[in-house]
Image 1 (cartoon, one colour):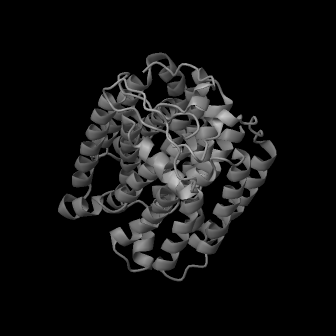
Image 2 (cartoon, helix red, strand yellow):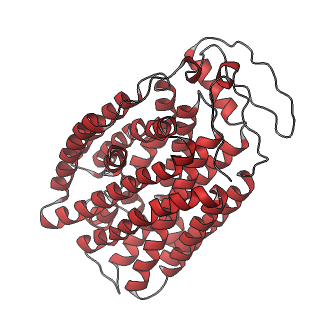
Length: 425
């Protein structure tokens, strides 16, 4: 329950402006790309702060960081209601995004530490379901409150809900088990990567004890791990697909012949509820068929959904959106589970932070780059571009998530820490 609530609170505000984009375009006399920046600014904040949170929280209590980050999200959410220009709203949205990795990156590691590996994918699916519920509540609630009152009242309501969520997580989320010394990285010794295709095991050398140099050394070693690099790339494409579809299709459906209102546009996100049911079941299935098969099925489902959004029937479009969202949620479950497999002990928060950076850079790009394709051919051109990105993600996952991909060599003290066998790939 508490893990699911963390996902809800983390994503309650992150995409709340998506159903408001046509309204913001008219109210602030902005371009479609300018209005889309209210989405991209939040995801950019996540992308930039994720590795910083990873470095700062490697040694801190997981629960304390999560609760503090939940409180940190509530403040700019409330202040966003005071925005007098689009630039001010974009600024507060950016600050909202900065605090999200304190929940997301840390919670992914928390799950990996507190549950056995054969249950990680299942527990991760509950968390991903929470993110789906939070994204759904934020979008639908914002749209309805905006039509009933105005968008400022909607932001005030979201801020109040964030404060309540922080209090509930503080009361319900269990304190993590005390970590042993072998689970806390030595700041003097960087992780040393194994060269791909060789069996050599280099001896770790003592580095400068400076925290900054230690962090850079650790990041460099993580980027020598092919499994991690391909997981980062898949994460970029996963969120690119979701944000690209649900951002730009609002302009498509607000125009003729659909001419949907703000409330109707927000109601499209009811398809997220399907993900709440499908994702836990898919998480259980992934533990049986493996992560590669799981990611392949998820991306294929999402591509089929994008194709259906090109249909003239609104009902078929909604079915396509349901397939897109469900496929993305399942892909995220598989990708985050693979992150736990690929990242070595002692650097999993940092790896999760880097994953979040790549993941949300994908969301940032999706709010901006498809604008060029919209200018060329509106929604059909955007859909074609998004499908091309999904094909690329599928190829990367099938190539990079092979068993032959080498892992980072753990430090001697890390090798003393029992690490159960990862799930079948």
